Structures are given as structure tokens and as C-alpha cells.
Image (cartoon, rainbow, N blue to C red):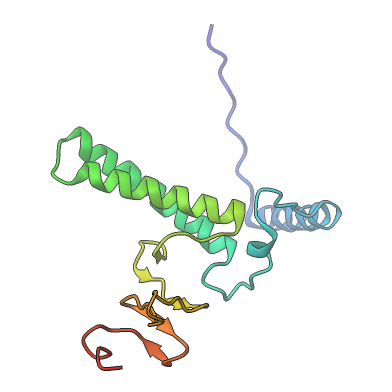
Length: 158
């Protein structure tokens, strides 16, 4: 036997507004008494301000977007589209790296953003030298001793 549920009587706009106010008041009271702990997020990540590109709320949004993209890519794998398996692996790796950042506070990816649209800029903190005493350089890295990003074509004569 199937139980039939009665439909609720629709609320008037005044009743809806009053209920919304009561819920907001109850949420504020609960939030003040029991603030969120964020035990799974590293303290250095929590210390970032909201306008920081690596604020934990933004990173959580990136993870959500990447999971949606992963779902689409998996569907493309089932349809045997070219390059779909690589996209699945890319989305999985990016999600894993973002979760590691939230957990440990270490960002290990070369790209960032909701769709990996931004590149990380690298800089040398401590210079390295070869056996002859010449400084070792890597293309695309900022070096404070020369005050610019190393580029093999333009910096070869230094």
C-alpha cells in the first residue's frame, strides 16, 4: 500500500518573509555558538584573506568546477572521443593537487584558477652554482641577482 502525502498549503509572501527572518536569526545564533572548525584545512591556507587568489573558498569552488569537468570528460571516454582519457587524467591530477593544497598548505601545480587558466611564476630564492662557479639558470625563473626573468635568448650575454 502506497502512502499518499498531503500537499502543503502554500505560504503567503508575509509568512515566507517571517520564516526567512526566523531561519536567519537561528543560523546566526548557531554560527556564534558553534563556529566552523575547518580541521581538514591547513592553518596557512586559512590565514589567507578573501581577496587572495588562493583563499580556501575559491579553491573549493575550483574543485567543484573541476569535478563537473571530470564528469563530462568521463562521459566523453565512454563515447570514445579523442583525447578524453588525457582530459580525465588532467582533471583528476588537478583535483588531487588542490585537495593536497587545502590539507597540507603546499601548492604543487604549475597552473591555478578555476579552469587552470593562470600560470605560476617561479623565482629563485637561493642561487645554485656549477663546479666552475657559474650560476645555474633555468628558463622562465625570476632571479633577484639579475633582477629579471631568465630567458636564454636575451640573457645569453650576461
